[in-house]
Image 1 (cartoon, rainbow, N blue to C red):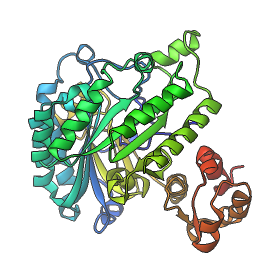
Image 2: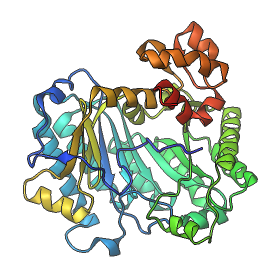
Image 3: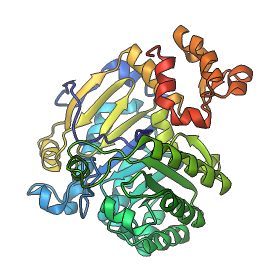
Image 4: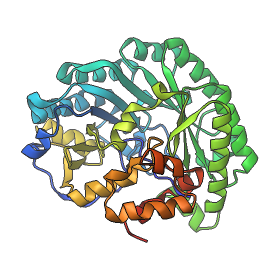
Length: 418
C-alpha cells in the first residue's frame, strides 16, 4: 500500500511540466473571483536541513549544497518579498488567512524570531482570522524550550515533530540524526509553551519489524500528542535510499508488510483514543485535526512561499523555481519566482475532488459523483471497501479499513478506470 503525502504544499524535488508563468505573477480574473468567501491559507517552505536524509525527495538543501546567494540568515527577508508579491497579485479580494503551515526542510533551523517575523508579515499583508491555526514542522533536536515559547508568544499554535520512529536501528536506516529521547523533551517543551503537538511517523523502513512499529506507536501515544500522522515509506527515484535498494544493500518496502503495519497503526491509535480523519492522519478530537491540510484536501486556495513551493488559487496552480539562489535572485530583481503553472480543467478538478474527498472520514457525497461513480457504489459496498450504512443512510462515501488500504482502487473505480 502506498499512501501519498498530501500534507504540505511542496512536491518532490522534480518540478512538473506546465505553461510558462508570467513574470509579474498575475493571475487570471477567473481565479481571483473565486477568492472571496473561500478558506485561504499560506504555506511557507524553509529549504534548509543540517543533513539530507537518504529517503527524502523534498526540495531541501544543506549548507554545503547551497553555494552563494542564499542563506539561513537572509531567508526571512527573501520570503517577505514573495509575501509582498502575493499581496499585490491578490489585491483587495484576498481573504484573511485562516491557516499558516511552515514546512521544510527543517523550519526551526531559522531563528524563532525570524519565524515570528514571517508570521507578522502575513498578518500585516492579509490579516489573520480569529483562532487561526499556525503550525511549524520541527525536528526533535532542532527546538529548545525557549525557542518554542518564543513561537507561541509570537502567534504559533501548533508544532509538528518529525519523530518517524522510536527504534534506533530504524532511525539509522532513515538517516535521522535525533536521539529518540529528544522527542519526549520536545513534546514536553511544546506543551509547556501552550502549543498543540502532532507527531509524524514513517512505517515500512527496510529492517523494521512489526514489533518495531508497535514500539514506535506505543512510544508516540504514551506522549499523548493531539495528532498523529503515519505514512508508508516510499522509495523515491534519485534518493540515496533508491540507490541502496537498486544495489541490493537494503530490501525494498513490501506492500503486504506496509498494509499490515497500517492495520496495526489504526488498531493502536484507536485504542489510545485517536480517530482517523484522513487515510494517514489521526486526531484526539475534531479540534485537533490539521485545518491547513484539510484546506488542501477540500480544494481550498493557498499561496506557497519559498523555493519549490506550490500554490493554488481558484483552479490555477503554480510552482516556484527550485533552488534557493534562483528563488532569491528573481525576487531581488522584482520578478515572480514562479517557474510554471497550469489552469485546471473541470475534468481535472473533478478527479482531484474524488481522489482527495474519498480519503476523508467525513466522506464524499454520492450526489457529487458522476454517473460512472454512482454506479460503482453498490459494488464497492459489496466488496467491503465502502461503509454500507453511510452510503445508504447518509448518502456519503466513507472508506472501511479495507477501503483505506485500497484507496487507489476505490478512486479508480469511482472514476471508471477499472
